[in-house]
Image: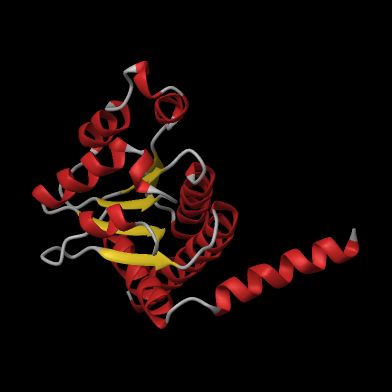
Length: 202
């Protein structure tokens, strides 16, 4: 059992070591972009695939808790969309819920908001394609954490936008989730440090 645990940790560390420098650079940029929305009393809308939604929920909960406890923030800084409909669409494609997440996303957006998207395979989620296109059409900044091997995601990313693309090298969904969790935690820590420094300067 101990060997299995050690092997698992080794695999995670090896996966992190294999990431390109762009991943680490863009993680810092992502924190900066997301902090702008928070510091201007706008919000971050987090959209996660069925597998990645818990990561988005963790990000929202930890950010909101820190904003309340450390910065006396008067409102939520982040919210995660409910992916129950997305799960149904993933399991039963003909169920007819393919636009539910997109409609929720569109109705909650305000000028100045930023979107955090975490998805292991955008091909399986029509909601993400619609949301990304809508954000591009309306000048909404997006931070996308996706798989570098996801060709359809690469086609959705726009060179004309200010998207922050963190494309992770992952052999399978489990590796992607582990690296994505590390990445989101790094973004959160950097974002909170940025807010703390800004607060002290004032």
